[in-house]
Image 1 (tube, helix red, strand yellow):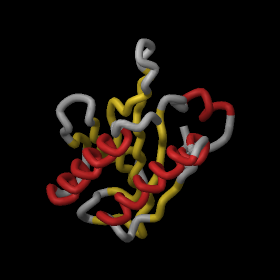
Image 2 (image 1 turned 180 degrees about the vertical axis):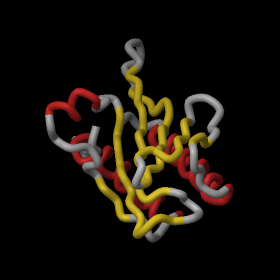
Image 3 (image 1 turned 120 degrees about the vertical axis):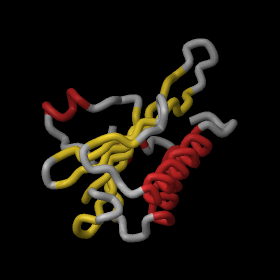
Length: 143
């Protein structure tokens, strides 16, 4: 779900802003997009209500990124017993003019896969960024 729609309280809004700042600290040329999904019926059917989705766009196509845009999806799960909502993983996808060029998932082995993957240096920074997001959303305070 678009990050702009998920910012329903001060704590969540602050954490979303922190995610944007963490990304821009690592990748200063990126422009953030808190509404990466269109607001039409077809798109609404595909959107995961248990995620916070943020897009980032770069000027031109970066050789080290091998993409022009990146979509970050922070996935959550609400524990029915403790009622705590925790970040359970992050999906990152890079897009170029052809569509999805590569993908990173923190759910399994943290490998970046695709036809045109980013450089090792970018991959390492991206994985560090994902670790920071998981720490941020899984602090003791409730999301």
